[in-house]
Image (cartoon, rainbow, N blue to C red; front, top):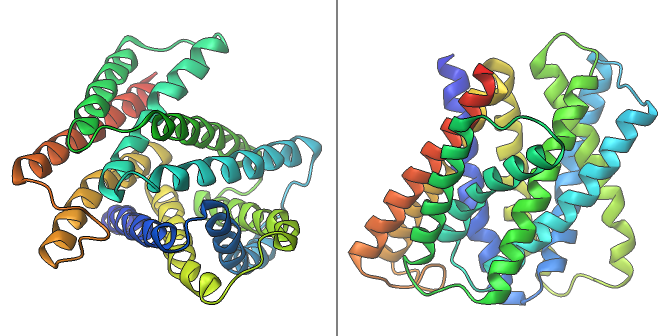
Length: 298
């Protein structure tokens, strides 16, 4: 259990660091689509290794239903990832990472639209999440309409990704949660790498662009490996809540960047603003924990 918690915390740290490198890429090269394409190619290398590893110990269920959810995962992830990179063009990583917690609202709305029961405690979590998002938006400059649009797009498609991944996991035949997780991550990131290959005809890497995308790709993929390890050693609910602590970690990393004088990554703001961001990140984490544990209890 201790190792599972450590793996989840390390995943959150690596993902928070990856957001910093993704914002640095976008500030330098101004093209979120290039980052999405180049980073997926980097992650595809790890995906192939994981897929080969998974095939040794698992029989991947290449059924029509499995491929249907895999197609959805690839499509939704590419749109969600690009949308999040669009957010990072105007919003610093410490705020953007915390605002991803808005995914709870989208999951609750999708569940309600599909006729599934959303528990009272989960609606309370939605209220907490909304309050945290409003407070986070006030902890600095107000987000533009375009940033809000891309944020809503990101959390919507990330939520759809979660649904597809969950269904893929349920279709895996192995008895080990850890092996199933590695198998799914291998299939997904190999497929994502293949899906972005045609984009190279238009988005040719310029001098230094592909190299600049490598840190984000390596950190993000490493975060996913530790996240799946956490899922395998704990469970999806507990591991997901630990990983959601990336919002708090991102705020603390933002403070460190400012202290080190890296103003290009995080603008200088007053101490009370950083405190508000930290409090809103904690509230967002609490909302996510309440939502997921309420679902688990049901």
